[in-house]
Amino acid sequence: MLNSSSIYDATSDLIHMKNGMKQIWQYLAASIMGLLGFPSCDEIDNILKPPPMYGQPYADFKALGTVRDEDGNPVKGIQVTVRQNWRYTKPAENKLFTDTEGTFQLIRQVFDEPESITVTFEDVDGEENGGDFASAEVSPEITHTKKGDHDFYGGAFEARADVQLKKK
Image (cartoon, rainbow, N blue to C red; front, side, top):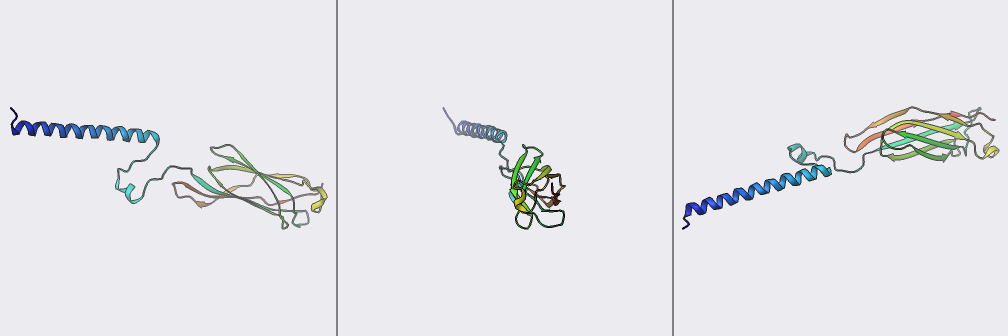
């Protein structure tokens, strides 16, 4: 025969067993989520300032400069090849041309920190731009112009390459 004490004990045991199973499932789910890369929110700081969510870190990158002839006049139509070497990803290459003021500017968002840059200048149209110029290559210094936020934004980087081309 069941009395109230044995019913209470059985109910108490079921509650403890249910709570124990719930904790096992929570630990298992948290472990799987952790292995998949999802953050947990176990501190009050995480509520006030959420942890970074998953995505791709990025930075702003700008390569700019001017091309002039031996007399200091701007040279338009010079092909500028900007080769960027990154810390963790494969190198990138971009081609552009100088404008009528002899300037060029490459602005892009990148997903890595720049390690080095090489800029090549080639006269691909010959006499059309005011002379037949010899090619030149420079490796300008990369400056960190804006600090990142220590989460996703790595800041801004800039490389300036000003050259004076000689006629062939």
